[in-house]
Structure formats: structure tokens, C-alpha cells
Length: 220
Figure 1: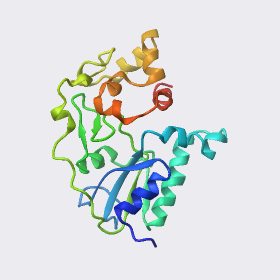
Figure 2 (figure 1 turned 180 degrees about the vertical axis):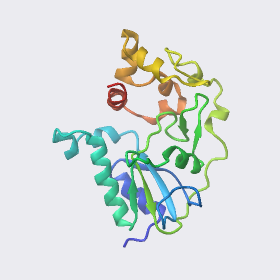
Figure 3 (figure 1 turned 30 degrees about the vertical axis):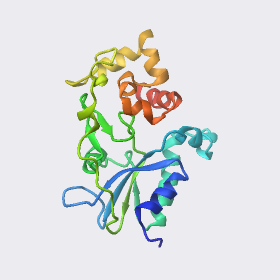
């Protein structure tokens, strides 16, 4: 067994263009696997994630769900290196509480439009999986407050051309209806206007091709 420490896990994840998006030490009620001392959330490291993952074997074999299959192969290998377990958003039902776990890290919050915002990825935050590891790994102190608290303009509140994502919440039917119109093609090809409006998202370096891939899955 390789002794887990955060720097070693981050270096190994970085070879796959992945990053640790936060972690916490589980307590009762966190619904983590038995024996978990530390749970880490793993997301794409940008820029460079999409260019890397689309060269992988899963992307070339023509089988369905290449991104999920790649994520499971890579994260299962990383977890095994540290005698841990990889967990994925698609595991279930019942499905793992990734939103609750994300907010437990202290690096993810509910944004002004209610979807999650991350201190690095902004509204482009996504998780390829989680690592449930034995032992308590030392974790850095999280930020003291959400980046939204100091965002002067909060462009996310007014960016949605369909008024589907607002401080009142997310009107999913309205979003899908808009995507069926000619005006909605920009969201389909380049990604959600609201997510792109976030200043942190703009600095994150996510390619439009990646957003288009996820939008096609969302709207198929």
C-alpha cells in the first residue's frame, strides 16, 4: 500500500489532468463508505483536460459513455494505489450525495442562482468521482467565504437568455424548451450562458467542445 498524503494524490491525479476539488473527514450522517477517513472530490484540471481525455482508448473504441468509462478506469486505479475506493455520481440507485459532499469540503457553495460554485472552477464545477480513503489526510484550510460574496456584478443572476436560471432557482423545462429554438443553439454548442458568465468560470479554461458534449447529453 502507498501511504496516502494529499500532495502525492494530487501529483498522481495531475498525470490524468485531474485535480482535487476539495475534501473532508467524514462524520456520522455523511453517508460515506465504512472505514473512510478522508473523502476527496476529483474534477477536471483545466486547461488541458479535454485535449487529454479525448485521446484515451475509451474515446476511440466507439462504445457508449467514453468519459464515464475513462473516469472509472482512472479513479479506480488511483483509489487502489491508496487502498481506497472510488465512488462515481452514476453509482446507484441510491446515488451518492455528491452535492452534499461538495458543500462539506468548504470549497463549494450554492451560487446566487442556486447551482454549485467552486472556488477555482466557478460555475463550471463538475466531479468525475470521489476517493474514499482510509486514514485522516491533512487537508488545507478552506476559504472563509464563497467567491460570490465578493463578486461585484453577479452576472450569473441575469445571464440566462431563457430566464431559466435565476435566484429563484432552475426552471429545467424552460431550459430545454429554449434549447430547442434557434436562439438556444449557442448554449448547445458553447455551453450554458449562465455558467460562462461567472468570472471564475471564464478563468478556468474549459473548452467549448467539452461544454457541448455535456449539453448534448443533457438535452438528448
